[in-house]
Amino acid sequence: MPAKIIKGLPVATTMREEISTQVKALSSSKSIQPKLAVVLVGDDEASRVYAQAKEKVGEKMGIKVELHVLPSTTSETDVIKLVDQLNTDKNVHGILVELPLPKTIQKENVMNRIDPKKDVDGVHPVNRGYLLGGQEHLALVPATPLACIELIQRSGLDLKGKKVTLVGRGDTVGRPLASLLIKRDATITVCHTKTVELAATIKAAEIVVAAAGAPKLVKAEMLSPGQTVIDAGINQLPDGSLCGDVDTEPAAQIVRAITPVPGGVGSLTTTVIMQNLLKAIGLQS
Amino acid sequence: MPAKIIKGLPVATTMREEISTQVKALSSSKSIQPKLAVVLVGDDEASRVYAQAKEKVGEKMGIKVELHVLPSTTSETDVIKLVDQLNTDKNVHGILVELPLPKTIQKENVMNRIDPKKDVDGVHPVNRGYLLGGQEHLALVPATPLACIELIQRSGLDLKGKKVTLVGRGDTVGRPLASLLIKRDATITVCHTKTVELAATIKAAEIVVAAAGAPKLVKAEMLSPGQTVIDAGINQLPDGSLCGDVDTEPAAQIVRAITPVPGGVGSLTTTVIMQNLLKAIGLQS
Image: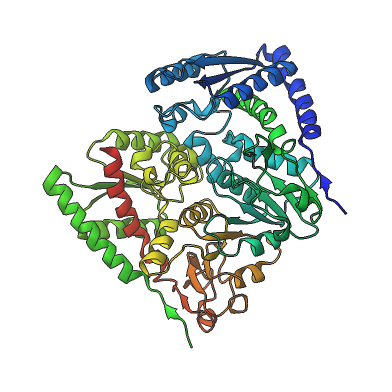
């Protein structure tokens, strides 16, 4: 029997309704108009699409998204100057710098400059540190790992005591997600390119999360019946089409439930950013 | 055949020789006299013993350890005031606040105040964040997890691709150690109190690291031949004797190699603090 498809949109819709309600409450009780500043340096097409998507999604929830588009020739100093301005602007509650940045700019220098309390994509070391130190309530958590957690929990899956195999150990998804899963009482195994028995380790899990950034790395024959598969990957194939880190169609013939790509985890990230913006407002007050 | 016993002292001795050499070089080339400030609030007997041990060990390597002993009635504000003074004192290169602090003082408020570049026990969120974010070269790493790594690597064990089961997910040892192990290409599984198949998960590993803070939690029957067992626990039994998180004697009849308690990981922590002090001096310059 083909697997249940866990779609992102219904979860995103529920979350957006919750966020809209909170935005209205903030506006009426504290006269706060939530505002997210998105900084886009250069002309990366995908980044521009993502930035504009945030504008639209935000608007629907009553959140103002302010786009700052800088030419690709902008110096690191000038990008940092903008971040500093946004840090001190009391009407700006969240700052997101779209990646990739032009090669002339060192990513860390920009990310480490963002006020941790406005850091809605959880890129600042302090926010990662709260995560590793077990102070998640103080942390703004990176969007993709948090989207995985929201998708799992809001689909009614209990993580407590579950054997979760995480494929990927990157700093954007894998490692932060490992911390989130441990905190939620999952027993996690983290696999990566140096893992010797990858297929067996994936097969033994109850929940598999793929976040390796490698197209269709997880094959049907590595999976087993009864599993839930969360695919956090998004890769572009030579023909321009998108795929995840799991070979979805054959996998869906084996497992119990699986998220599609596109239409799974990725459908939640922008909404999670907005949820982080509200958390940021709470941390700032 | 009983297991090989991996003792901490020979490793500590080698590390101390390396540190002494570096201290001499710093003194002659840059006229730097490395100094560690240890803050001890209250009259916790164990903490006082640890603090004095640091003084002695430091002295042997040419490192000045300055003890600041405050009465248990000291307010949080006054402890923070001392930390601020030490932060700005250019002759102080490292700050260590002994735990536990009196109950009237909130630990996080003190720890988060230490200059991250002087934070020789890696307690500040920024240092934990570097760890989770894959920027270990910028991080001052907590002493006990780093001692586990030094003990493993300097005993000639290769972590690459090895299946490591980590028992414990605390913020002092378990989670930081997970990051260190992932970075070193181990395939890690993190177990804890909510893990369903604890014995089987431990049995399946090539290396077992116990850091649960539970006396003799890991029994011989959970282990298998060929394994290496690193015991990061230190617990006091009702009769006053010390034991680890592994039931060492019976375990040693099963596994290939095991660290003793006391005399294993714990023999390295003070030395690792001094190694961190030298890294701190590098980060400050």
